[in-house]
View 1: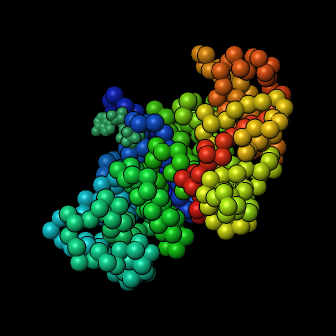
View 2 (view 1 turned 90 degrees about the horizontal axis):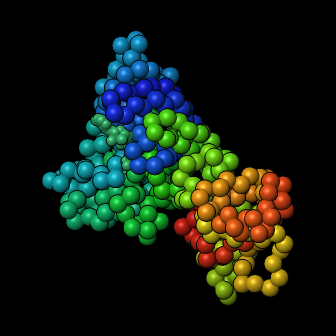
Length: 362
Ligand SMILES: Nc1ncnc2c1ncn2[C@@H]1O[C@H](COP(=O)(O)OP(=O)(O)OP(=O)(O)O)[C@@H](O)[C@H]1O
């Protein structure tokens, strides 16, 4: 486990963060320039903090006050970046075996064949990186990091350069790495869908400081004041997969506030998954609508209303206690006479929820 409590003074930018992780994936999330990559660099040992300490599994990696600084190659931390920086003159196999050099003697518990099988890269072993697609390069980069038998994996926007279908291929692999190899991961991203799908806990950074720490549901479903990026707000809901409608290609999801239909498959019936709903995809009503084309009606009560210019963010406590954020015009909020405590029905188009929004992990 990692314990971080560090400061870094770069003159124009000051970083001051404290957080820990557990098993699974801890996401560092926040807007561009908030300090996510700097934090990863401090954990990896690519730069030195100006104050504080970082411990990994109880071992000090850096402790400014005690003058401790373990060099990066002794930390047993694997790195995966947006671009994997594979050695162009080496085959995929030799790039992977390069990662092996960093595994400590007698500690090769992560096996070459298992990594190849998990990442589906057996057919690529003889190729040079120039002949790989972006998604394939990322798989190899992940494999190389994993084969060093790291105590921790750091991912810095690993999917940012990939298109949506490549992202959908790689995300389950990251989940399998978490589940099969049990290596804890610190994952930097500013893509909310990725974070909600992958993260077990989220550390939200803002202007170099930790703003909030919690599960995706707590962080993205919390008070609207928890996140500043208000017009990019989304909520994470935990649902159980119900029946699929093969004729129409829809899947029924069960939530205490109502049933939800989504487009496409969501995996096995009875599975617990998270879905993400953008605040701009939610329409508010004060009574359940009669006949409409809207499939999804979730019941709840207004918790708070936050006005920003002509718009308002309405934070709803759904029946069953999860939160859902909606964006509406202030005019609509006034006409509906919404105020904290008002009974409200959130209408969400089925097309707003699809397989991109589904957590495939559980
Ligand atoms: N060596 C440096 N000297 C001075 N300022 C720096 C240095 N490196 C980064 N910064 C600044 O520190 C801030 C945080 O940078 P960082 O790369 O951690 O952001 P980030 O949250 O990872 O952003 P992004 O999502 O865009 O990658 C930025 O304002 C950046 O300009």
